[in-house]
Image (cartoon, rainbow, N blue to C red; front, side, top):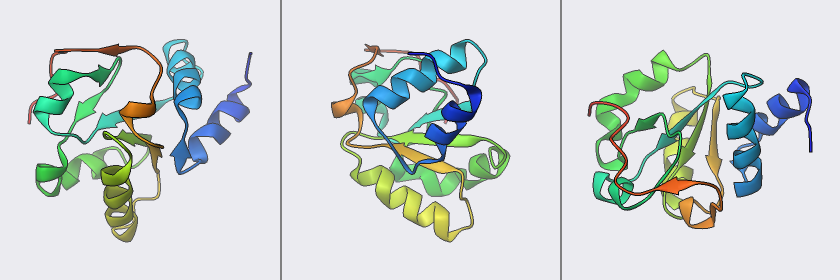
Length: 128
């Protein structure tokens, strides 16, 4: 199915994004039709076990307080968070919303629900 830029942008406006929608958005991002940042907030060992292809950042929940400036740098972009089941992303979203960041979405039910392309032992996409 083909989506317009407006439809893709509307998908990103939802706080919760399904596996199917994230797959659609990642494909659209490859072709330049939509722009967002995909961020894993699990721990490094979890990321090494399995991560979503094209993850832009890994900032573990255990150290996310030390990296709040990253969200300031990304304030003009939509950020899609994911964790294992969606619990941690819900907590992080709540905290970030209270700090004034309103451009945050998350993969509902986490990576366990994601049926798109995953990879094991991917290089960490950023320096922690």
